[in-house]
Amino acid sequence: MSISGDGATLAITGAKVLIGDGTSHAAGALLVRNGQIAAVGAHVNVPADATVIDARGKVVVPGFIDAHTHLGVHEEGIGREGDDTNDMTDPVTPHLRAIDAINPVEGGLRATAAHGVSAAVILPGSGNVVGGLGTLVKTWGTRVDDMVIRDPCGLKIAFGENPKRVYGDKNKMPSTRMGTAALLREAFVKARDYDRKMTTAEDPSKAPDRDLRQESLVRVLRGEFPLLAHAHRADDIYTALRIADEFGVGIVLEHATESHVMADYLAARGTPCVVGPTFGARGKIETQGKTFATPGVLARAGVKVAICSDHPVTPSAHLRLYAALAIREGMGHDDALRAVTIWPAEISGVSDRVGSLAAGKDADFTIYSGDPFDLTSIVVSAWQSGQQVPLNAQD
Image 1 (cartoon, one colour):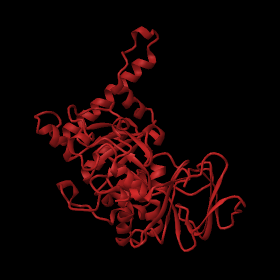
Image 2 (tube, rainbow, N blue to C red):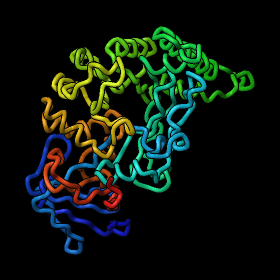
Image 3 (cartoon, rainbow, N blue to C red):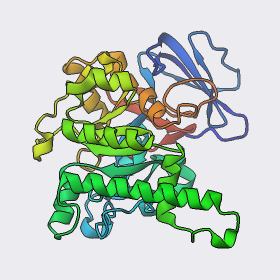
């Protein structure tokens, strides 16, 4: 079913509506027109000509947002041919763009959409110190350019084990944490000098040649989007923050495995965290401290936190499972919902379009048979921009 741009109205009535910001309506209605939410609340006038879905006994929530994935760039079940996650030929590759490697019809994206995860941040991997530009897209479509919500949404950088292992094995820099930090500083110094020369050259013929690597870094220096910093261990997190402060740039901590040990510090700074993947074994030294208690500790301290899958490390389609496990370990139900809806939207700078159910936002929502964090509940229907996602895409 779809509601097109011809003025037709879809009405979801009688359901418990969870807005995504901590508020709810026990028996509310949601009106959809032209791919957007027209109205939502306990007292909504439903037009006589609306297509009505009676959702009594069910729960409507905003489409979930997975704030850190490699969906579409690391395709399921294909191997090398479908893995475009890391271009590990140079440790500093800020000019790479995840959008150029996304296969929008691959199985992981299809399943994710059918399970009610309507948007995802898709990133290059963490093999390089500077991995490239991430993008935030809807999870259902056939042409990635039509799925974009924000591109780029951040510049991926990485600390800790991955870059030092990749390049240390090649007997190249970085082979240490010191080397990773040094390369990152060097890259930003060069970008700052490039920006100064480009903006102060009175004679265009004397300006530097255009450099795509520098342009990506300059955009971070200008505050157009933040660094998305892969950092698990506490010492790596502090290094990431130290460098961000040195250059005055925005930063989001990705994975943030040991962020719970510095929750008050992060709250005081206003530094957001994207936490995960927490499900599964502790496969590396730097993930020994991972626990599903982390998102709740951060939220209670006042840190804006998103729960992520790091797909394909853990399936994005099961994002609600990871939120449910965070609830089991002490996170409040409302905070868990925020951590997969409005908070990732705010962290990514797209809360004007997605992340909660409000008039004027994209009609991205899911109807569940019960509470979404009760794992016996099932997806009744999932919607993106007023169009129903085929549920036969579920895995």
